[in-house]
Amino acid sequence: MQRSDGTLEELARLFAEKCHGRIDQRRKYTGEPYIVHPAAVVETVRSVPHTEAMLCAAWLHDVVEDTGVTLAEVERAFGAEVASLVEMLTDPSCPDDGNRERRKAIDREHTAQASREAKTIKLADLLDNTKTILERDPDFARVYMAEKELLLDSLKEGDPTLWKRAREQVDRYKDAL
Image 1: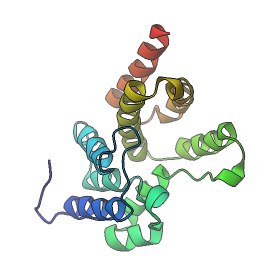
Image 2: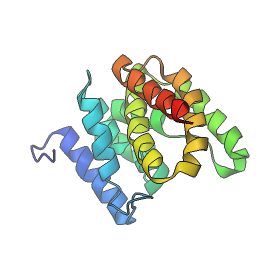
Image 3: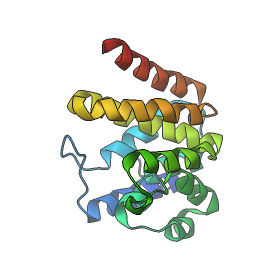
């Protein structure tokens, strides 16, 4: 999966790896280096119709939220198209916006305005996060899956195969309750 061909995607992978690594960001439940999550998102996006900009944004989808990198830095390094996708994937809410329910509503409104390409990446992100949460944190899964079900309504314009997989995750979870 790791490439060293000098493409914009490779540069995005290296940038994301550096940004998440600089703060020693780890996956919450496994302690793995955080870059395993963007890598999984990229591979899912790669499995459906995509562009190089989408793959770059998949690598970079959490750098603004999590590492202190700005959208301006992303744009300087990767161009306006990639920066626009990253902006669409970056939750705009902050703790001052109210309780979790209110913050998630703000984030859903933002996602509803995203492009088809950004929604496809967001679906890939949800698929990977859902798998981890269901396996590792059944208590939080109740909250997360209810939020995900609401978010899916905003993601229908994304890739239909990924949307169907995400919907099936929610339905399997609800059936198991």
